[in-house]
Length: 157
Image 1 (tube, rainbow, N blue to C red):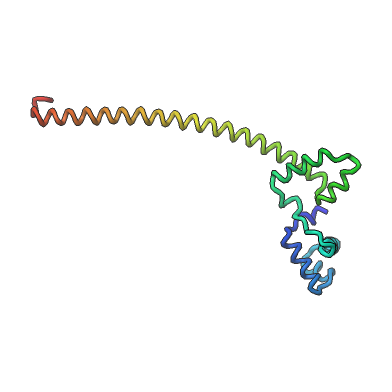
Image 2: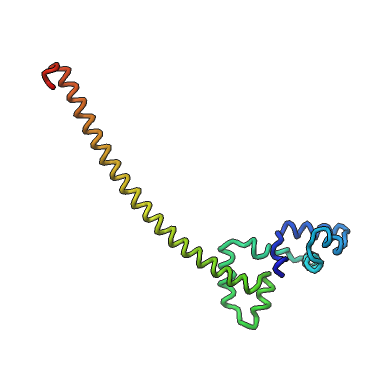
């Protein structure tokens, strides 16, 4: 079941097209290295008009979270059927729970880092404003000294 999950939707659709185009399941299986059982299941789904699902590797973190949330509402004895229907196995749920936990921790770390960087940015802006004022003051004093020097000559020094 895990190998089936590793193929992209496009790849599976190409396999189904080969079989529907006249190649046998055996030929397609041998030429692609995909098990006959997988090819058979994909063709069977296609003939029933069922879309080829992307599988768990194509899911976003949000989609994984939704499936985890949904799985909490499934009764223990119905879990196997629900997992098959969604094309996942119980190990995926465990792995996704860890991924979400790590994402939340990382998110909290990111928030703390953003807060620290904002504070640092404000401090730097404040420091820059202070230095700009000091520079403006020094520039004004220098200009006044130059004017005095020009008006009164070297006596103003």
